[in-house]
Image 1 (cartoon, each protein chain N blue to C red):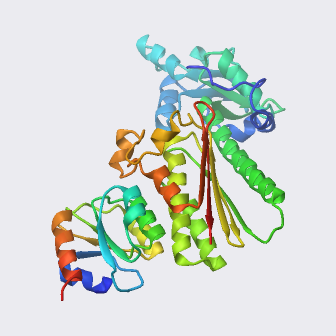
Image 2: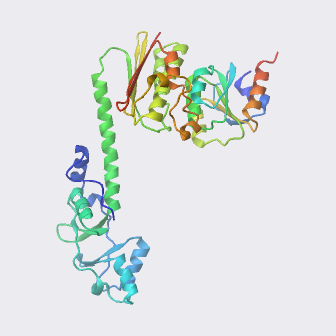
Image 3: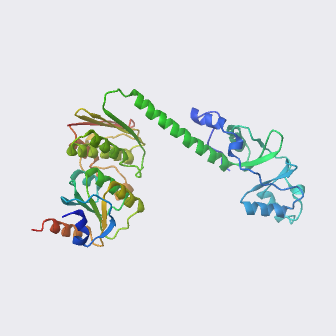
Length: 304
Length: 111
């Protein structure tokens, strides 16, 4: 099995914290499906088949005696020894993990050895579970999702705290690459906020068009970014900033009909090459700051 | 003509009928969403084959009251749901955008 692409020593701080705070017991499957040394290899084979597992710890009085893997069952079948006792054929020197070990240690074990599974023991040496690579991956994904949510919330809160208390509406959204599911959500929120501010319909539409075009540009062309609006007292400012390849030729990009969108995106009705020209046309002030390798910043100001 | 009169006037199937009924200002036929954003009028009827959720997003941003999907294109569930929550009517036609546009134009310009 290929090594897990995660290191318990290097990498983002948040990931290392997760790897050390999660324990083997948080990821392992339990209760453990085990057999006794007196059971036949065939009975172990059926246990595997009925439970969809590839390894069965052999346990006596709750203590680990050995392990039978699917590979061992196949060898037994091949050698005509499938009726013999598990205790005769089992692997005796088994590497096991402890239930309160951090997941970081478990990943090291998986990467060092070729075994697909490890039995898990508690402090008293009792077998309490089994852990396989997908258990680690699953727990990590759940923990990482939670951590990313926390980080995103913290980012928005930090942005909110930086905002001056100026009585204006401040909104900021994150935009993800190729996320057509959410495309347009930020623009819709901007539109709602402007209507609540009592801004007149024609101006609201101009802002909605500019916001939508800039938002879709980030979805279609960038590696992700943000789009924000500050509105009030006769001035609407929409800023879109992304991480992406940048625009090599801004003049070309501002030409109607010029698009660098791919086939698939055009088939959805996007990529008509009108995004930036549309945004410019509806704005009173318009600026693009971009270059190869440094992402793109677009700023639109609409006065009312 | 009101949005609610479209179905009988043009022989359209009603696919999403949760909307605020109001007069239709004009029609716009296009499949390029940026083009619709730039040129469609508020309270227009959009004639298109783009049967997906983003057409609803654009319609709602621009103030389009109804979308007519042509050529019997199937409508994804999330598009209909989005239209329901945005209050954009959706109709379906077995005819092409050309035919639907022609009939719509005639209906709007009837003396």
